Amino acid sequence: MSSDPWIWIGAILTLMIFSFLYKDNPFYKFGEHLFVGVANGYYIVFYWHNALKPNLFEPLGAGEFIYIVPLLLGLMYFTRFIPKVSWLVRIPIGFMIGWGAGLSIPAYFQAEVLRQLEGTVVTPSSFANPMSGVWSLIILIGVITTLIYFFFSKEHKGILGHASRLGIIFIMIGFGASFGYTVMARVSLLIGRVQFLLGPWLGLID
Amino acid sequence: MRWYDRITKIDRRIIYLLLTSLVILPFFLKITIPQNIMPQTKRLFDFIESIPPNDKAVMISFDYTPQTQPECHPMAKSLLKQCFSRGIPVIGLSFDPQAPGLAVDALTSTVREFDSLATNKEDSLVYGIDYVYLGWKSGRIAAQLDMGESIAGVFPRDYFGTSIDSFPLMDKVKNYKNVAIVVVLASADYPLDWIRYPQTRYGVNVGAGLTAVMAPKYYPFIQTGQMSGLMSGMKGAAEYEKLVLEHGYARTLGTAETGMNSQSMIHILIMIFILLGNVGYFFSRRSKKGMK
Image 1: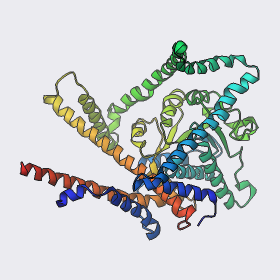
Image 2 (image 1 turned 120 degrees about the vertical axis):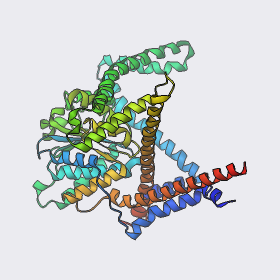
Image 3 (image 1 turned 30 degrees about the horizontal axis):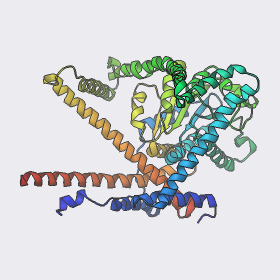
Image 4 (image 1 turned 135 degrees about the vertical axis):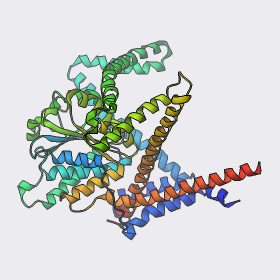
């Protein structure tokens, strides 16, 4: 069993959080509130030392007065708490939306629309390996039928109805894969905690 | 209560107890369930294998958080072991505020393990020559784009406050031209930014090690070639550990491989519960229809 007090604190807090699985209780509440407090404290200290101080206050202190512009833009966010001047908040929000849209729209189209379209197109080279050709066809059918499922301008009857029903199957396979992976992710977290309790804390496993 | 009603109303505490027991048991019974290596994991491994020693660097973006440590930390350690064993320089950095502590832990523990096996001074790893950790930076999109021009311009100092101009490694690695691949180990959508910006603009090779919950979203990027490989969750980490062990870059398997035995047992249990739930639902619906 560990003699490190930090390991003991970690183990006891883990058990406090797990106690919720039986039912809500004061130990769980204590663990939860402590986590929220510590996380907030961590973020405040972290951003002060790694963002605000080096990126704003130190350059300002060194006489680089251009940094007054981002300082003012940042402070304008707080004007929403003062009703008389709350309209000023639109300036930094407008700046952020303009910057964000300008930067992300072309990149999004390039990386997530055009390249994905390219990947969906089936060409003779897709059949260089017969199996990859089959998979390319499945991807193409999956994309088209899924898009048809979300096409609401025409009633889903006849060919459109069959295609949209096939689209639902592809969507369900996608949901199934996502659910399976989500289960795996959540179980991994439990395994990680159990490894910590059995290993570093109790010393029962390597 | 009929049997089919009973199996759809199992007390959740019984389910939790069974889950916990099945997580714990494989550690003591030494059960080994074989794991197949998925093509996307092998692809990432092979890509790193193809990088010549002492040439271009591997940039690792440590962007995972303590709660996802069981999935991403073993990935980081295996990746570092492969790079260090093959003489590939490593540059670490982070954009997630919770990641620096974990990044330093992964680097120091792997370096310590590596150095303990070194027979002479030349075999041991030197900070600033073999690896560097640049630390955390705010404004990640701007930072990612600016590193295409100059890494030193974005990170003038490393995590420990030392000027990066003083590191011999950073004399060789000026921007993405000197980086063979960026591997993003993340528990949030950080790889998407690497794909959208540096990959699209500079053609940087991007690989990733992600939590399982995120993995399905990234499969289309593998298919289009925008990503050079992917480790998916604890399974991906276990597969990479296995590959690293098979190639002689590690002496033992890591925590992911041992955890996967529990993972497989839990999956079987969940499948049984899903089947029981469906059977119960089917029979109770049929009985209700019969009563009508």
